[in-house]
Image 1: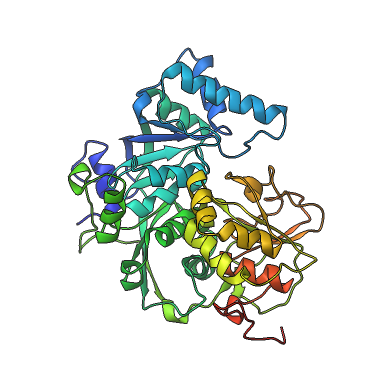
Image 2: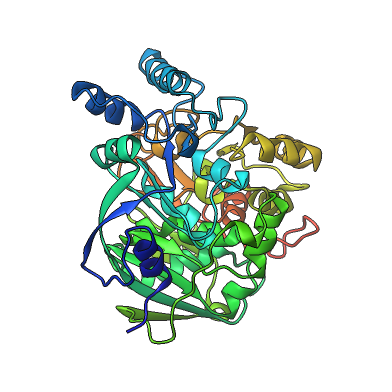
Length: 431
């Protein structure tokens, strides 16, 4: 029996010629990604046991991103803990405030993480890096401590779900809509502890930024990670970052690999989608209900990239955010912020009445920079709409693509981005 991409990577990193789903393995990790929220707990575990060491400082990447710049004393202390540990252990891959942004997006752009490698982090959206043809997953603080100390992690080899996406999307439909539709179909636990492997001609024609959006949200379907095989798009992405194909290993699923389940999606039939509260699988066609919104949020590791910001600017150019709406735009990294400024996108946002914030996780997890208050209604391009995720438990969170968020911000209620054309004129003035 053949193996899937994920099985091949796990076999190579655990000293096995062949692995099967359910098998327990001790897996070497090529990279450990650390931020200021979950890492201090792992470091405390190591210190308490007299194991305060790093297996290889050159294989650690540290990026403070969740609560920076610090909004209170506790956040400042967590940041200090991470930074002091970085300096003590000579960790050179440290992307400090003002030099980084959201950890997952920073890492994907460095060229450090390569196809065929393994990555763990104390953050559930570590699966983001799977778009590079790598095995990347979030772990708890205990496993994170073990990875920091020994460079190894125990895994149960996961089964794989194959997601075949055929055809091409219609105007106004984005990768975020594709992944929300998949999650709607399979459910919030439909891929429980599975690898979500994406294939099909839609994927073949998708840029890397869109691929990262797909793999990022594997965890929202209960998945262990998402993954996409290396192709010319991946190779070019790595080449631009100074990494040639001889610097990494490419894996592809065998023709006789066993998949737990196969999901087939016709991209041409997918419409702009909004996930209603309080679960990402509660998807409906955008504009089905004209529910008033008080907040519109664009950002996060899912949709804070330059292509996302361009989508927002296309909708907002020549328009104004509705008076009853507070709109916040958060570029995912310093580099993206700078590029957006150079392209004139930030000016479009400000002219429309939106606030542009500094690169960070921001309000995505309800820590700062736009936290929701009682009964607020927010449409967000982030990845989760759980009760209390972005602030007060009574707040309502709707998940959507950046274009749908922008359209809703202008309309003042949930809206379909297809109602707005590229020239800045409403195609449905009655709305």
